[in-house]
Length: 348
Image (tube, rainbow, N blue to C red; front, side):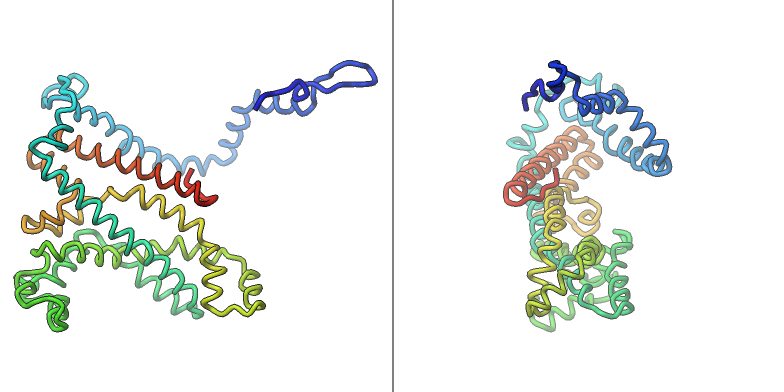
């Protein structure tokens, strides 16, 4: 916005002169001593800033410094020379991934990554919201606290323990001394055949995505509901009272009071979830998949782990992860732009 003389000077009609605007004097003083005010604020709340140090160190060592190794995407690998001194190889790794020898496996891994995340978004994202609405309707504090603790517990189990439980529930073999209880139940209901239960559901590529999504909901839905439940209890009680006066029942209150009250939280969480659409950690998939289920289970992270660590092709693995992260960044920007245009809520 263009500035005018009136922003800096005011006209004194009695003396027929222009004088400096007092408001501008204050603004100039604030700008002049801005760093002083910042330092005083930091000294006043130094304990809070000290608590930020561990987080800053984590981001420095595990987020920013590893970016240096991304140069390996464009360099010929050399175990002796550092990455910066290695020979430039151009976009050979990216060409290999997109149209070269690794294209078939990479596109399959990228497709599996997207499908697993997309199914998780469709089926896993609404579950914490539904749980939070359910917790809000429980009037007894003891019962609500008990239900919340029971749904939070799976999140605090390690990935190894959780995948071991899933394996024992569905796999036929030495680990369970027979069929898993879930396999037995599905076979008894006629959902799966005896052959599928005998061979093991985790050895069947058709069942991997279902097992992955169901176990993901069981593991994270309760813990993720904390954010939505906090947003629900922040809604003013007067809104419920006004709705009751207008004759709204429980379902109407949920539709016209609760859901609009947590809409901004849902939008923000949805944008962040879309941003992580292609960021599937390799740990859970690595512990659940095998060579029989590569066709539906192999994702970009496990593809990079197999090529980089097992196969020694670090440049190829770095290129795969870099492409994955670039696509994720574009998804965040797109989702945020759509949310900003469709509503007044956005991430930035």
